[in-house]
Amino acid sequence: MPAIATARKPRKPIVVHLGNVGEGRTQITSAKTRVFAHRFKKVRFVGIDAAHTKMDKGIKNAVQIRAGFRAGLRKLADSSVSIISSEMALGYYGMFKLIPGKHAHEEPPRGIEAYTRDTLAVAHQKLKSGGKVLIVAGAVETQRIQEALVGAGFRAKDTKTRRLKKNEYNMTPWTSNFNDRGQELFHTTLVKQK
Image (cartoon, rainbow, N blue to C red):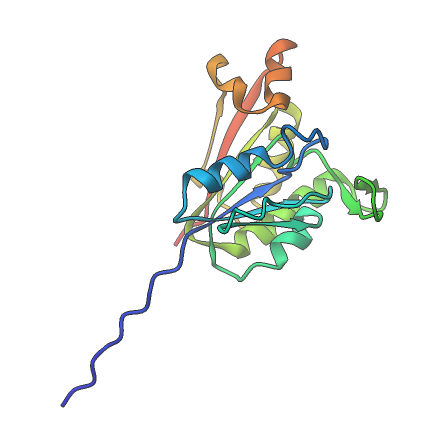
């Protein structure tokens, strides 16, 4: 008699939010991760930020990792992540130095360009085939990201960048600030090829 194949329960997709804590204002700390976790129960969310915060105890499908972007991503299994998102975070920071009880500070030895490229390389490793990195950033940071993506394993032809429409600026308090100052923001999508 042939063996009966046992169906394995599919794993929940993993969505990572880089820089999700923000500036520590309690009303918005990790807000995106919290709201999405409440809304999409069949998805696992991972927040990564060097600033300290805790996820609500009632949220079972989200975790918070206190680390720099690269170090936090390295804690995830290779080829396990569906989406990595960053609003006003990736492209803005250099190396993180964690100081207990305080916010993260930049460490001079490695610059923003190298840190962005290295973070995108780790992101590429952690993404599933067909997985995406979604980034919202200003013009200078978007240019930095576009320069870093090829060295990180992504192909330029698999990347799309567009200006945000004015009605999209209300994503976060930081993106709203850009709208208030009349500065442009860009949305970049990177796709890991199969």
